[in-house]
Length: 253
Image 1 (cartoon, rainbow, N blue to C red):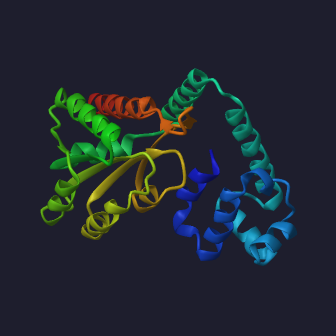
Image 2: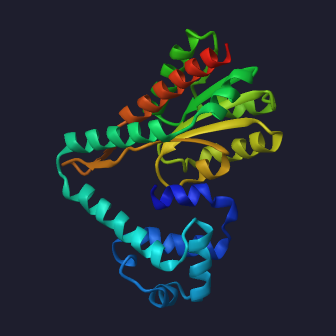
């Protein structure tokens, strides 16, 4: 499990000091694993006890174990950066996503889909919209009708009509699309069930939604300075969600 995922997992247990420390660590991952607790406390201008409490809140016995985790993650990140083979990068993302699918229990999410009166799915970009349409196509065969929200204006329009009997599924690569959050806050206040499907990293969307699915999609830097991400892992997550739902319905019978 990566540090970003730990932040999402324990988000509700963290305070402003914890987020300040984690922000520094996430932005300086190539050096923080070398620092003792006093050095890190000095760089964050915070007490060593605050560092220790933060590590325990996210599941570590203490700073030593956390430091070893940072070292392991830094070595894993170096391996990723050293590889300039774009095909291997794709294979690595697919393999990581498959491992996640094997480990993830989707029973609760399948139950949400099954009991929802209406299901809406929204993708925040072009590729994300393709994922949403594919999810719609797959669930048709199970007579679960998923309505695709195709534009930002539609996302805002449904807010008045949505209620706690509905389900929203959101595809977002970054999980930090600003236009999502005003309407999303309204959905949360109404008690609407929400499933986020995002890249495996710390993001605001995942922290706001109790039901999260993650795809591993690493950046590739093209020769014309364009940064690209593969959406193959997102389609894998969609397929896994659908097949888990099929299994859920069979087990119910």
